[in-house]
Image (cartoon, rainbow, N blue to C red; front, side, top):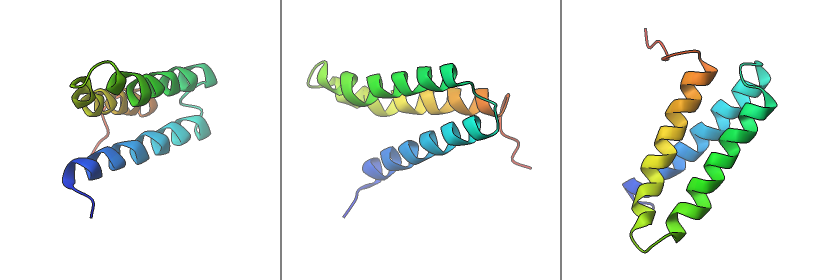
Length: 82
């Protein structure tokens, strides 16, 4: 069974790739910008957890910040909820 922290990480990964694809399809994101976000994602996914035994705790907040920045870039600001 999957726990709540693992579920949050999984949702963040799905949202990242979905918003990245949306940005590329709608031309809100250039290939260079998409490459930068993918590079930042790779750093958060592979490098940060290997820095020390406790640095893996920072990978999820790091990914959340990247997701927020990507949403702000693709949607040109905050997403309207109403």
